[in-house]
Length: 257
Image (cartoon, rainbow, N blue to C red; front, side):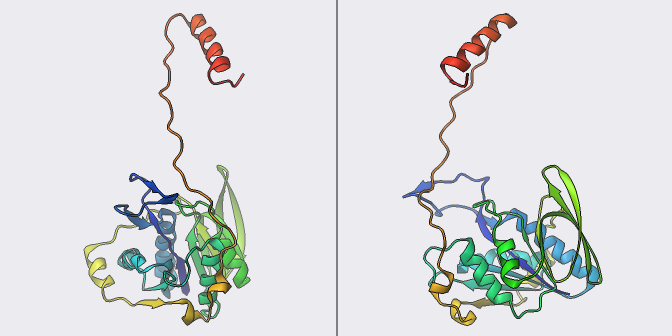
């Protein structure tokens, strides 16, 4: 099988995030593989092991993404592709990324394309479906189970706490939800092997794309941290008195009643 994974380099949201000049300050920030993309990488490796073929991980970004691509190779992916747009695209969005990925994939005869359900830095969940639309192939989002039999595919997807089972066929794009699998940690032998695995670097020119072809359709006006929450209040005393005080606070301070 010809399997591709769409991977994004994101900052670690469990680390402290600083805003400077309306943008996230990347100095000192910790960057990782988008966690939902880790599920996609793991599933791709499992599908390859069960059905044969190759797993290629693709990322659109800057040369700094090479570290995360090498991590994916250490997990077990066979090849990696970095489409470096650092010098060509000043401000991109989901359309930009999807257009570039689809242009790369259009002649690759992909059987299965996997990506994360959302990226933890943006959370739009648009790139996967946009790529599928541009390639004119079916897609299923937020999957928690994937079963492949020849070209027939049965997918279980998460729908607001419940599950939906869908029958479809290859070629197919799916986006991974938490619970699909348990991503492996790169082993020492895997890390050593990853150094010798192919990592191809491309630019827009290599895809016959111009900057105008991938111009963003949206514009980020401002990025800011949430307002600090005030300390909560603990009510004490008789229960009836607590209820009266709570109602008064909801009316005078919270102003929700």
